[in-house]
Length: 303
Length: 303
Image (cartoon, rainbow over all chains, first blue to last red; front, top):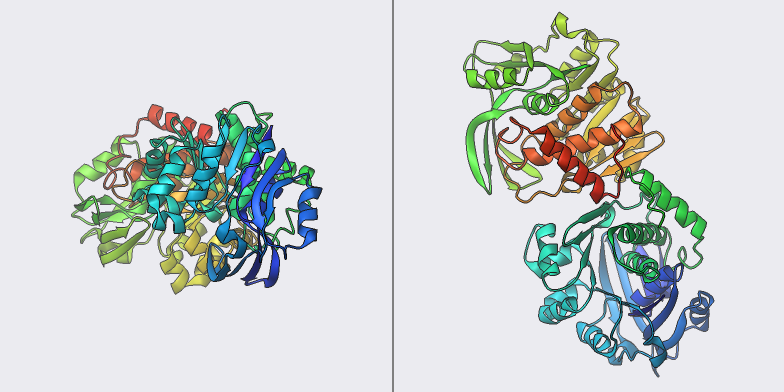
């Protein structure tokens, strides 16, 4: 009943139409872990430099996130500087890998009793390294991005063949599969091994494709998008955090996992950095999930 | 318990990646009427020339569609020639208005006992003419297009202020409202008078916005798109045909109306012209609606 999350931990400088922040807490593992911590014990694997502010580690510890796997290397923390001209596309102005360049994601022995794993968007070689060191995990998921699909598609394919759940957006699944139709593309991915492909469709929500069903969920309508950074990681974290507590991955559980991920992602984009997800009120989340159910003519499965 | 549909009746020459057809049956009133005829008695208002093939009127009559309001003017029938490079955008190669140029949509006296009206995408002046000649209709809906919004936005606004339901796509509602956010844009339209704005989102489905709720429905996944012509008209026809039989326009009825419209539109795009919707099997439609409900985690409302 706990979740290991492997990914980046960094300091983000972000410019959007609504303002900007400088060296704010970011990284796929951070967004994912904060989202997942609403549901389950999270064990983080990542790396920071010796300049990483103590307040950030304290924030993660406050969420009972296990930081035994958060390594501190000598040097500077990973930094990313991006600008959003459109909400669904960030332009990277600068990436400083720093300590992340030499990151080796060792899974602490104490994490090996865990049952679930979320491989955030990092080099597929590192994802494969993690996969080779864990076994008997019940729910293993990976995220990826266009960069790795372009650079080393065979490695991405190998990762996909070894997980149960794939998080991928429309552009990425088309790029990976060479197919325009995302449903045919998802079925192509399922043939590699996964049980479940979660296609993220930005403002249109997401669709889960399994061997014998679909689940469509709209995005939760947002009054004002402030900063889309981390939306995908937050979605995946919420999804996997919820799932980590379940016995099986049947459709009713997938429905709930998607809805929680959707609502947390909507909260995330309503503020810069992790401002909105660092103190999530679960009663508010539940209320938003209920709205989402009502707005899709759905029924609460009691899960 | 019957529906008047006003719109174009024409002969379409269509080129898509999957082939082409020449002078096939088309027009917003035709697609709408065939879709609606699965649910209710349809009374059509439109115009054709003296070259309009008898087989087409026979097809409509076979669906028990009342053609008293289908006027036959001397001259040639309205013709449209379009090409789809992308599925969501047709390039018009040629439009021959012919008899449609002088069309005056008179509502036959026998239609005035009807309760519901769908104003297909025609000049807003004609839509206003129809609106001035009917009264006490319970459900009145309009469709429109970017062309009229650009040409005479004030007329479109006047039409919108006089109907209960507006069918409009994302591009059109942004153009009309000047707002990027379709939810804010839809609320702006609601302020003009309608109770319900149905925003069509192409491959992503649709969202209904009312004063106090939303209803999101995905598009039904289609194995192969052959010809998107008439998808919006078919959707609106299915929606209004279903609704025409209901006592009120509460959310559970709107859910069902959207689902029937969605499924009929999916059938429409699977073949050229009206091939797939001219002999709809309702048991197949019901099965697809049930799938759509399952794929959204929904429940059948028994409606």
